[in-house]
Image (cartoon, rainbow, N blue to C red; front, side, top):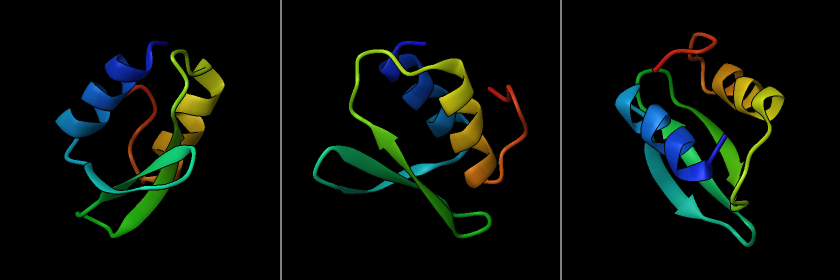
Amino acid sequence: MKRQEFIRQLERAGCLLHRHGGRHDIYRNPANGRQAPVPRHQEIAGTLCEMIRRQLGLEAGQD
């Protein structure tokens, strides 16, 4: 999945950019306080997208 498409999905689900790291951006879910790193690659594997969604407390495949 394209990184920008995945970021749009996270933002639609209510997640916000918390800070920029060295090679990752840290996104935070304000509803539950969870945060997860999102790599700055053009393509992010589907399994990694699902793992990030789980870390943020979002349902699998949620847009």
